[in-house]
Image (cartoon, rainbow, N blue to C red; front, side, top):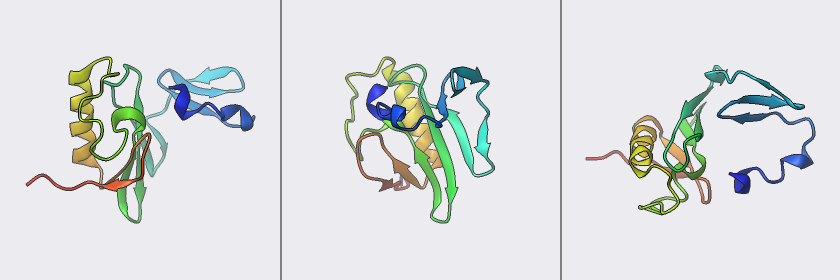
Length: 116
């Protein structure tokens, strides 16, 4: 969504990674599964059908950069803007199972606490 990339015009050499591919100067190439050996792109639909998240291997563990899959830690439990709430629940469950930390779309990074 625009609120996550509205200032991209400030970076004329930037490439944009999105659902349909990688945009560079008006051209779109196929989106790779991995950006690097440490960064994997995964589909996380629910808030909207074309959502992607990044799984980044770091010294802290696996960090998920998730956009609106999570807005903030524990908020909102029920995303009233979700186009497909059931798919969003599955995406959240998947991210929570994979990540050690989550960087949500509108809040501070938080640690994933294992379900007991």
